[in-house]
Amino acid sequence: MVQPPVLQPAEAVRARYQAALAAFVARVRQDDYILAAILCGSLSHDQVWEKSDIDVILVGRDERRPLRSYALVEDGINIHVLLYSRSRFRKEIEGALTSSFFHSYFSKSTLLFTTDESIREYYADAGKLGEADRELQLLGQATWVVSLLTKAQKWLYVKHDPAYSFLWHMYMVSHLASIETLLNGEVTGREVVQQAMRHNPAFFRRIYFDVIDRPKTPELMQEILLAVEGYLVERIEALFRPVLSYLAEQGGARTATEIDAYFRNQLQSDNGGAALACEWLAEQGVLHKVPVPMRLTEKSRVTVDEAAYYYEPA
Image (cartoon, rainbow, N blue to C red; front, side, top):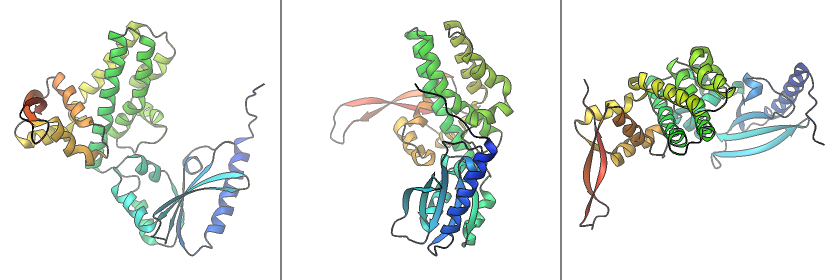
């Protein structure tokens, strides 16, 4: 019969993990080809338990293999190691969007040792939010919410399944929490819902904690989805500023293809989110949607219409 795990006292577990980490680092420091060791994950900033592993980033001199992954062990504890070359590590740091996964992962890490002062210098800016990157992260999170909100609305209003609508709603919660956290100038982490609760407890209690404990009736789900859309509408300028600025500068309509091409690299995503954001903004009356004729191939003689959007600032 399956039994729940028998847990050791938290202090004893942490002490064992710290001892294993110290033993591992002592060995790694003797390797002249390792420039730095960085502790990530729960042992760096949270609580470990018996099923945790230790996450470590190593930076080495070997440029022929820029990234390797190893599952190591020390005193029976698994150590997940990512070994970066120095140039690859620098590329990851400099290329990561503020509050992206890698930036969040790095900002909550602990530098264990380094023989390269340039690596130490990265820690001076690890927890800072660049304004341009923050705006792009807000746009990326907002487009996820818009996409998932559409799914939740369909399952409620068209398929009349409030329980499945609730499932899609729950997919939205972490993205909404990321928005709230970014708006308050913090780097998002794995526990982003808890971060957001500190900044906007009333809203997140309403759309997360309270809704979990209540029957998923059509009336409840309609109330929650309206609250989510209202949250977005109240923050349109902050959430969609990159799109609005881009279209204002263009001085005319731009097609969905052009918009997505422009934002693809900036958002570090290929999910068509920018054009989806434009469609939602058009539904809110913020953008204007127009058809633009185009040919599907260079040799096509028939034209079809592509969605295009333009913005007229007030």
